[in-house]
Image (cartoon, rainbow, N blue to C red):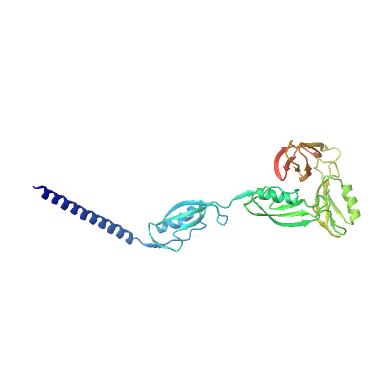
Length: 319
């Protein structure tokens, strides 16, 4: 066979091979297309807001698959629920199609700091540092707090809230003017103090006793209304006082001590004590670095103290 004949034969074999490959490709596509087109068409359901297990339960009867492709923060959709899907709900697809979804991680949450007792400017700065915003600021007169200090906050301290949420504050407007009467803070004072005040204010006081109290007899344990509440001539005032009998052991008078660290700037110090009778403030004021604070208190041994510096909880103690 001549070289020319051999070359011709190679070209013929290559041509036949190419034709065969084209045929195989066409046959394969034809077969796959046939299989696909023989599948039923279904409508993609709405998956947003559904858990992954619920989404699977919806897709399985339709012979559709599910694939998670990512996570995103979104406070409008519950955590671990479908946030977005592709194809979109209502799209007509054939059985066997895989639906891709992005799952919500919920919103970014932070803990609201304690700003009670702080000047408004300091409170706003602390809220910003905590990735929160200052909401509505209202003013109320107060016998306990100086003008400009935060009396209360909403949401409360250590509450989990969405990042960038607004915190509403009530700020002290100082002592009330003539004609405005506020409820004093009588907790841990005596019943004589209450009755002397009530006589001058022209109000009657309902008194209940707690014989199980370890505080000296006549010590005010709770009161209604709360301190700084506005009073009217017909306001109902009630107190619960210790009814301890003389044979019962008296609550020990103790001294709580706290020393600020050296260095830095002045700090707003707030010391809060919690016991069986509720929560009360032992101290609230601005002190210089290195200052020593000594606060007397009575306790039966089941008390817990929280110490805040510039609105941040820095220490807790069991007493």
